[in-house]
Length: 275
Image 1 (cartoon, one colour):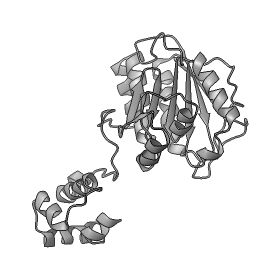
Image 2: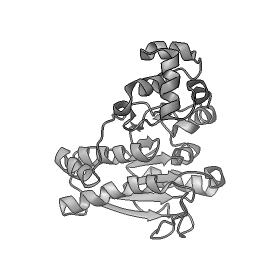
Image 3: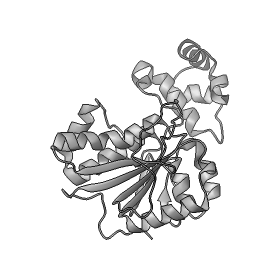
């Protein structure tokens, strides 16, 4: 059980101690999305309102998927006090889930006010038993396997989920959204807007928005017919529509849709849908 007398997602000016436990195989974007908004909030406010540090299991620099190492301040110590423990992981989490680590996560979480998992970090938090009976999310690629592995967890396709003292996020962009939410609830909308502006970041999604299988970016403005067709395909993956049905719902003929796909993506709608 995680100590949760007071949620960390509430108006407070007290310094919040945050420990990021980073594993090799993490995405550098997930690490940055977790850490940099807090750094920017400290700079904007002129105070150390987020006292954060990065650690690893061994004390050595974890290597991210792009090959860049992440500088850490030392080894993860489950006995060291922290308000929030954030587990950031990616590929290879099955290699890290030792009994010693999971025991350490449980011990640290019990003493903390909140505990969370970023991307595949959710797997380690779940293996430690910290998500049993709670709602959570993970990256959309892992969602089906995660649901099978942890039937006691209410797995949601949301960008991020906060359930009491436990939070989870599905990837880099949702993690940035989550940290902005933490900043906004603790320090107010003005600081959160300033932090978003530092990174020229438009937060256009809500926490409960489903993670897209295909990130369209500005494709809606580029060709809304193509964007609508892809979203239709995405929402009918389990029971696929015919290309003709997709075209009809997108308001074009099948021939026009094929032309749009070939011009924009370089393959037929059927080939894209199958892939």
